[in-house]
Length: 517
Image (cartoon, rainbow, N blue to C red; front, side, top):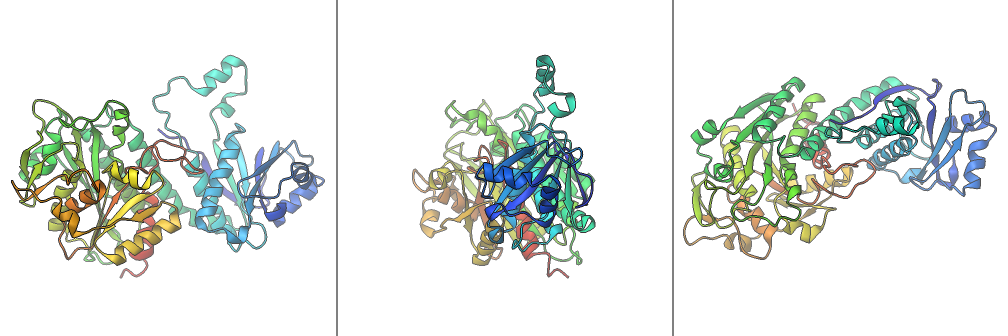
């Protein structure tokens, strides 16, 4: 479904591909290898930089065509790093995406990146190579499964180019001082990229192709990565008395599924797992409380939380993370029909609590309530993090740059915010307050599923919190603005961003792997 080039690591002295990217620091300063190539080409790199007034500003480029005495090299792209000493890990990843974007604009089948930073960068060559390759891999994603007319057909019809060029970049060679070390460092990022691509593919799929059953089948296939996967069908879900989740699903002819993924990578199998819970509404019409028609097509992405959980679990398994982890997702379709839940209906959740459904478009929290009750009862996790494209209110508050973070535990919140800062997947902590709990009080049963006009994202979080055991650290991430149709950047060119996979992977790596016994 996605097209990504083969990424290989070679020495700095290895033969170069037809298109070459050379990093240039502040003032157009070159690395040692960059200077050598410039000297061989009679100084044309710096001459071109001077003519174009290129100063090495970050992400700026200058192109040198047909440089002399560089063999089969057809073009060299100088890519600015800015003040390399100020660059952090995510900056190098983004720069890798910029390099891939510049290469892709030239329609070349193979390319080289010289992974040697300008002086003063303070990063080892193998680490730099892995980060640039990771960024390039994420940039070279496209969801073209349903496009039947390929660009190569257009090019052939117009007499332009050849098949290899029209099909885009096929091979990316990253040149560095120690290819073996770079290859080893990249293994983690390759697994992470695979998880992100899985999440993107899931979000991008149209709902007619990806119902609850099809989604569950995709998850089951990930057993090949080392995950233990258990799929609960609608009969099993009914037997478990997940009445809140089933209340969402009952308006659709497509049966519900719950997918449970387990990764037991900690040295001690008795170590309590971290747990990720995902909302997987494969399409959300709003049910009887139907949404406006305009923009409803975007609701194929209402399973972005589940996609992030699946991608994270895949990444943990593929890189053999030293942690025990559980991922659980509820897969339903929210449709209006003669069997759909009505506003005013009262349903019984898995926990035994009764819920008054005043708005059937506040459905994701019903799914999460049953999953949370079940997973804490069965697995006794050390912490729980749920992810859901839950409310439009969070986009009113934060736009599409930040996801909202609600947390019952300050350390858990701090750890997630730290992972957010490191990965660039932005979180903003929002309040949990007893006032929001009060807004959910029902005169007819235990709790109602909406709290009124104001503080919509806060009352949604309060509803989920109602079902969380007080002794389990819990966080809720409302990623309605970031999981789909988020602003595109150097490494996220797609409608489905795969948002959350890098965040959760980093959170696990920094806090729950290093000290495992």
